[in-house]
Image (tube, rainbow, N blue to C red):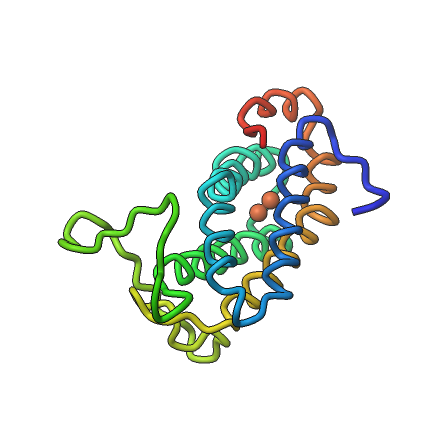
Length: 188
Ligand SMILES: [Fe+2]
Ligand SMILES: [Fe+2]
């Protein structure tokens, strides 16, 4: 990310990106014995700002960008949004799965253990060719590949946004319009 000066209005999002890169690196380096810890790290990352960050980009940043540029054929934005879907799927897979066969204690995460009626579960149909395979069904033991895949994708995603999409946004959206949306982006 060196060499690109981030516009002041987007700096909060960029700070999140730095944090996401740290998480991504931990995930990419993860070993089998780390899965419990990594699962908690993913749950906390997502619950403590990750989900909000994605929504701020989808709900505020990109609609503002779309006022000044036709995004329907913008391959970088299309790729960015597809990565959002894929990352959400992997986070959901990790949340739903178990990192170990025993002692799957969750911190700060409510899982409906008894009724099953109150909690929406998102059973995601995995692509046939996905490395994730069949992991991710509710309560299923997770494969380390899921964590590695999320780490790689998260890193790739941050690089796409920082090096291309955000750069183009700040060159395209007039400064008053950037400042007008700044307050939507939460602080870490
Ligand atoms: Fe982002
Ligand atoms: Fe994003």
